[in-house]
Amino acid sequence: MGGSSPHPYIPNTDEDRRQMLAVIGVESVEDLFADIPAHLRIEGLRLPPGLSEPELLREMAEMAGRNRYPGQDGMACFLGAGAYRHFVPSVVLQVVSRSEFYTAYTPYQPEISQGTLQTMFEFQSMVCELLAMDVANAGMYDGASALAEACLMAASVTGRRRIALLSTLHPGYQAVVRTYAFGRDLAVDVVSPEAPTLDESHACLAVQSPNFFGYLEDMGAMAEAAHRVGALLVTSTDPVSLGLFRPPGSYGADIATAEGQPLGWPLTFGGPYLGLLATRKEFLRHLPGRIVGRTTDRDGRTGYVLTLQTREQHIRRERATSNICTSQQLVALAATVYLAALGRRGLRRVAELCYHKAHYAAERIAALPGYSLPLTGVFFKEFVVRCPRPPALVNEALLERGIIGGLDVSDRIENGLLLCVTEMNTREEIERLVEGLAALSPR
Image (cartoon, rainbow, N blue to C red):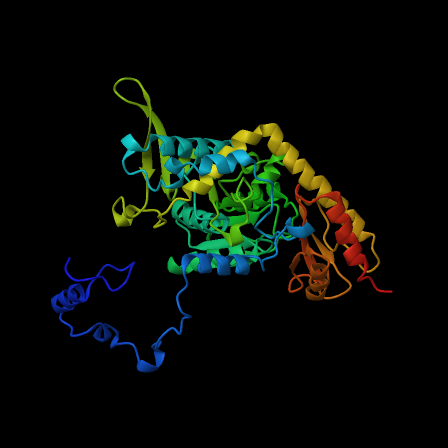
């Protein structure tokens, strides 16, 4: 490469650019943007002058110092709604930080990827055990994409063109399902949990339990409603709740999904997360993503390989089940280490702490003047409180006390505030929450 580089990170010289422009037949780089109307082009980014590395680190540290987060100076958090603050054992970070895992991508060459492939196999095995299903893939982007892919999978299995969503499903998940369905020209219906009306045109009934509001659905009735018309039952669940409550496979789920973030992964400002997806053996060939299998080589030694790859890049496009590409393998490894470290008893203990702390908080709040619990039934670690004032004002007042409040769901329940309590919330934090809400009670 001749000439000096004009940029420390872009090695192309002026001569390199002239040669490339000549090959594609244009006079200048500006000609490449000729089809974009002039009024839509950005004329300069008006960036500040460059900084030295020490100056940049100092500025970034000052910016980061303005963040407020749970655990900082007594900051408490009672916000959930799909992303949860759970304890992450130190061993999780220790393992996922190892360079052989941290830098691993797709194990196209199994002979040099045995460690990564084995962790994927162990992950799949644990997901099957956790959800009580026959087979699991190696992971999806997140809980929402896992549910959407499961709905498309149900349409493929049944040959039907309609998807039914229970109205108590997370609204974000509903939006993702609609986006996925749009590309396949599938219709999406929303049905009531009191009367989930389905017919022979529906491929599946998608149900979340615990639902968006934190309460358990009658999953036996949901399974019966779906199977009565030949549809599949697709479920979404909080994996931590399975330390205490029945897994999807035990009540007739055909495809089970979950958000894996609670299993050893921090909130990380909303991602990357991990989708769990498992199904019954007869639907194996319809699974999206990939499956790792265990085998033996000619010398009888155990080895791991990519057994099934249904991505369109790997097989004929018309036979592909999905175009999902990247596996969230690092997050899946964290979930695997988390489950191995806690074991059955540890996961049950975490679930019990969440359940009992949430119910203690709900009981204390419901006793306050002006507050009530508008929903009935069994809830896990989240519950809705009807407040005497708009939830936005309640959250502002709580934040002044160093408390991150809940999610405003007043568009669904009048003055509804969705609160979450996990094992990370201390009794002192719960009492501070109660005091903060009490200060807003009507006099």
